[in-house]
Length: 137
Image (cartoon, rainbow, N blue to C red; front, top):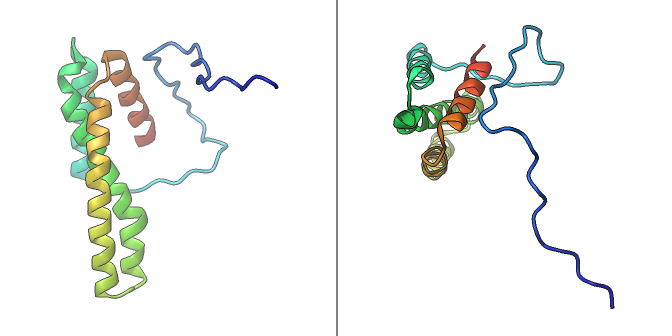
């Protein structure tokens, strides 16, 4: 009888924690999608990122970063899913069902986001900030 394969997860890669992402000036060769969000959300995002990046202890701003990630997620869900439904004129009840479904989904997702970001250390938070900045360029 042959031995059963081990169910241990693979060893994590040896990447250093909190490494900043490299910024590139040329467009990515890979396909991508982006969404437009409000000027006020952009300004708020920049303010939170800058505050966290300049802080001696960025962990004090975990909640603010989590709130921004949740707002960006809501904005993206609206842009990629709810707006096209409205443009397609799917009807009031279908639109309302989609709105309710998205609200429930983003509420659950928001809790997960807050939980994960709430456990990050300073280098991890800075990595998230760097990634968000890269997306905003």
